[in-house]
Image 1: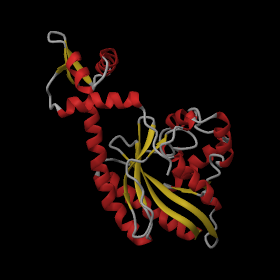
Image 2: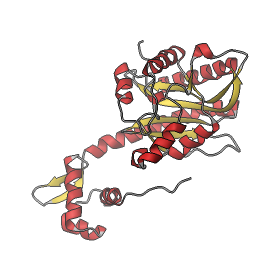
Image 3: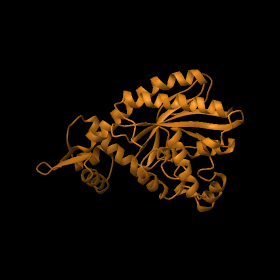
Image 4: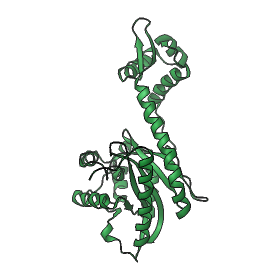
Length: 297
């Protein structure tokens, strides 16, 4: 696995927030904070100003000190809900993992990234890292907008692709229509494509040299070509399947988590239908347990 690239400016922002969290509510002024963190005062002030403007810190105009702000309360609530959802997902994905001896995962979109929240892995299978991140832009992220309103799908499709690639928009809309009808997605990838997507995890493809991005783009199938349509699944024929995915929904009927069932081999169209139905059932159960509801189509 490639070494993770670090960002010193981001690390300094994290250090500021960590300091206030560790202080458990104690406020600090610019000079004391810069000294404690080994930063120059101008650098520290720039961070404090931005975090305060975003609501992650508050500034007391009388004492000129800083403390944790209300934006962290909202972020904490979202994180708490995500962890609760992960626990529920694990309970209902574990029987699928045991039944099919297949890795199952729950993931979601947080900001501009896709993040893996929970995984269950059968004995002997390669581990999948909770917290793994992918860019939420083509070619990654189709399954996170398949069951969302058309406007959200269009916004995702309008994002700058992380890699140069072909996009047959008409075919993609057919994919969306079929996946909404079946309730699940069936994705196929070549062994090379699977390895390529694993290498892309956490990589900002935008930052790669243009010639490297172009080469990687040529190696990635066109969006939509990786997805089987229901009408194309001959019941008795074998189809190479990478994974099957199905959504859960929140209290507003909006797409929430995406559950995936890894296959990684060729199975019949009939078996694809059975596994898809099992995943949809698990997704509906998780939706109900988390207080969600199915959308009105």
